[in-house]
Image 1 (cartoon, rainbow, N blue to C red):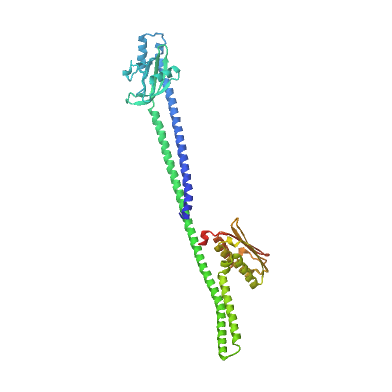
Image 2: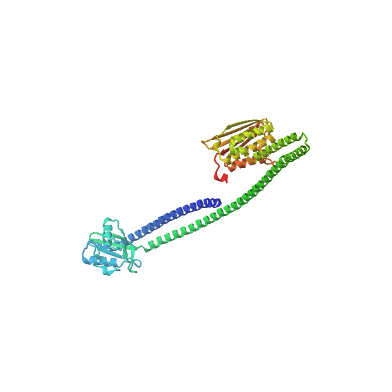
Length: 457
């Protein structure tokens, strides 16, 4: 996966995770609130129906009270009470029923086939012993009982709430009930509205998340295009600079060959031609002329070695970095006339070849800057390395006039050497620091002793 794709994933995935968590919380809270609302509505409706049932039973009791309170317990009085209760009805399925203590049905106006039957062990579809439960509620005084009963108008079992009381002297259980289909419908409607609200909320969250993802994607795409343009521009500038540096290096080598080696070789050619003519004439000066040509040939060989050493110091391959720096310091001290103090505390076996070449080039660039710009009299060079932290440090300090590092970029062509040093150090993942004042300039470079695979490519 490319870096830009990883950045996009790291930007979008946390957003999607946050949206998923928000959706889960909203879903959980809405469902919990929906259940609470359904229970509240159910309890409210049931409380209303309980009050309604109590009113019906009290009305029935007040109607039969003259007969029941008369003190007559004969069968004729009981039949009159049952007949009066059988005439009461409310709604399409509202009626009163009467059972004795043994569970025998004494009166049921809507299901007359049950009259006279013992229903003590009858169970509803949920396994509730209906008559036993009603009898227990009546004798305990609570009065209310829920169960499933066959609805007369439809013939289907439906949930029912009953309220029963005892006529203790006769051992009768009197009660009535209300079917709870409207409660179930109300609860279903509430749950349907909650589900619809959850669906709408989820769609809204999904829309917001989609817009956010598109914005992140668009921002990432814009940033990617901008970064790509910037990277292309930097690559173009770097390529141009590499070509320029190559041309400058070729120009320098060409100038060195033309002004140095070429002139020396022409001079040697003239010396040998002169020596040949003098030998042909038998002139005694021929030997001296030949010796002068040999001396110039040795100078040409020395010039070739110097150019080769500038391109790649051979001592780096043979004796290592400390010795190569020692030779570089000696040549610099002889050429510039400056006093140079070189302190080496590095085991050369620590370094990779690429790191050694980088440090050598950094020091070359630093000494060139000192020679051209510093007007210094003393240069201090330190080279140290540590096995424990696997780092090598190069320290260069001069007592020159110094400069303002912030103004280098404003000067045309200024700071190229320091920029080269910084880029070399950054290529190896090292550290570069520069401090300059009127008392001198100090350069510190720290590199790892082992180059990373990317740095060696």
